[in-house]
Amino acid sequence: MFKFFTSVKLTLCLLLLLVVFAMFGTGVPEQAGHYEIYFQTPWYRLLLGLLALNLLCCTLKTVRRNFTDHNRFQQLLQQSSMGTPLTVTELEASEKILQQVGFATHCAAENLLARRGRLGRWGSTWVHLSLLIIMAGAILGQAGFVGTINTYLGTVNERYYDWDTQSELPLGIGLRADSFRASYYPITLRFDLFAVDSGRQLRQITLQEGEEFGVEELGLTGKVSHFEPDVGMLTVEVYRINQFLGIYEVTAKGEKFGTLGNPGFQINNIQFRDPILKQMETEVSIFLESRFLQKGQIRVNQPLTIGSVSIYQTAYKYHGDGVWSVGFQLSSDPGEPLVWGGAILLICGLLVVLLQPFRAVGVVRQPDGQYELVALAGYADAAGQQRLAWLKEQLELSSIPPDPPVSKGGQGRSLPL
Image (tube, rainbow, N blue to C red):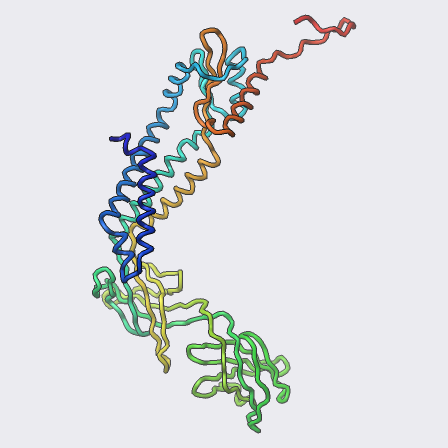
């Protein structure tokens, strides 16, 4: 049974079935809750469970393999009679060469075992284990929840809408949205510029936020510092010869000159290109049993985390007259740390497999006194055969006797071998 669940054929069959059923599930006409219902059916989870069992058995198999490598390779060397003939004269010289090219060696009797990349031997185990951890995190995540809150500014919310039970449930804390601000990428504006005294249209101006325009007739310049498309408020900084005079605000209900006073010009008929949202953020206050606990800020992709619950900014709406409403999504996923940890372990395992490939060879002395080079692991493919041939060449070079010394008798002849 254990052999069946460690079969690569079983793994491929399960993956193929999951792919086929996933294609079918995503190809049928979409209905409300279709994906959630389809991918959580008992038969689909059964396939995932069988895949998890297959991965678990394969993981245990690789662990046992890693711990028994030494004894198993020694047995293979003792039984081997199909190695590559090697013209070497002693194991000691071969051992030194193998050590120089990064192998850890172990010499026993007339056999020499050499291994390198032993960390990479565990890479496949890490990959299997990481997938199991990710699947465990996904299962644990089922104990969490997803809910929403839609509220007006200034209202304390102690309940949220749970989408699994489709009912309102207690939040456990009080959540109040104090203020909201939406920021956009620079917006292109067009407005008409009038002279206040004569009512004459001076010109029509098209520019972006942050750009300046001139009112030569009055000796003034204006800079569009900010525009809020939801509220319809345009804020203009007014200057005379680079000297700041004040702020001029244009709203849908009229104008505000502030400390500036009437600048002598008037902006009407503001048009703008559709704004592109850049960021939205809400300042919130957290209460526990009517007692203030803390303040926080919620932005897109920057949630506020209270305990195990993360609160995300999802929506907003301006209702006019300064009234805003905002939407939050509440999420609790106890399996998230496992998923992230498994993903990191998966990347590390793949890097170890790629950067530290495991290889093992042996040098065996046969009964006739000849030596053989035996490939034990990591030399099955064409590239491995090339590496093995290079290693054989290095070992045989180490067995060539050094050149004899030259005679000092002045004859220039070498000593006899």
